[in-house]
Amino acid sequence: MSFLLTVDTEPDWGMHGWTAVREMLPRLLELLDARGVRATFFVVGEALEAAPGALAAIGPEHEIGSHGLTHCVLSDLAPVDVARELVESRERLEDGFQRPVRGVRAPFFRSTPNWVSEVRGAGYSYESSAGRIYPSPVNVRSAHWAPRLDGGVWRLPIGTFRGGYTPFCLTYLRLLPELFRHLVDCKAAMFYLHLHEFLPPETAACLPRRTRFLLRRNAGERAWRLLEEVLDAVEGPFVTCSEFLAASRSGGNAAGTSFSESAT
Image 1 (cartoon, rainbow, N blue to C red):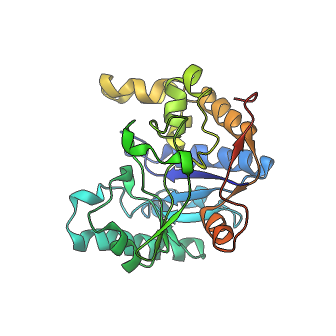
Image 2 (cartoon, rainbow, N blue to C red):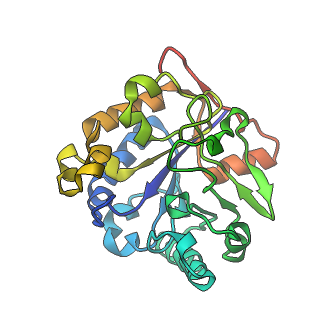
């Protein structure tokens, strides 16, 4: 049984800088290396110019996917601009990391009406945008979490906490840890996080009051501890998205996950 850890490697939320990538990515890589965890980093293409040193430390044991070229909302763009975001980001990332980029995640999970054909046309073999940022019944899929083939593109949905309503991510675990640490879904095979969640809480002081709370609550060192709780709870290896799909296609036992109830 395997588990997927994915990292949205993007600008600092609401602040448009790259402090989190430069300062938090090295520590995350150390943590993953110490625990033998392989992850998939969905990287914004522009990050290669903004934080080349930090990104260069992502070793070959991890996978690089695309998170768009500029981290804009793709559903707001004309088809020609969507194609540019997808193709140019893949080409830049492949050139910068010197490894193939097979997967893509739409920023904010906001894909387009023709998303599958656009992903296939841009040269990707899988996408991981099937999910929502906010709790919604649309997320009810992790009770039978599995990849599916759609128009020649593999689709890897975001996992949910138990009940299938809330996205399985560090954000919600930070907001209500007392609740969600007991709602880890034993069949939610994918967990995702953002590097800016590890920034010290005072970093969010410049944000508008209505959004400041979202980044400040249990950020920084508390977020690191919550991530470690998730890593400790998982029974089975962490694999990259491409490794998971390869095992699934070959009939390997990579489609299930298991959590220790006592650990959560």
